[in-house]
Image: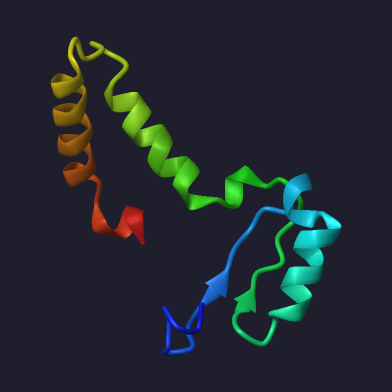
Length: 90
C-alpha cells in the first residue's frame, strides 16, 4: 500500500466479517500495521459502509420502470450517478 499511496494517508477499512477476522488476516494486519491506519469498526456494520447508501440510490433508480436492455441499464445508472450530489458521495 505504501508504494501506491506514498503520501502516507492510507486507511484500511474492513467490516470485521468472519473472513476478515481469520487468524491469517489478523496476523497480516498486525505484521503490516505500520504501513497504514486501520479503522476498528463494530462487526458486520453495513450502516457504516457508505457504498451501501450509494448502491441503494442506484438500485432505486432502476426499479420503476426497469431498464429493458443492457444499454438502457447503463444509461439509467450513469444518469443517476451524475445526479448524486457531491456531498452525498463525500
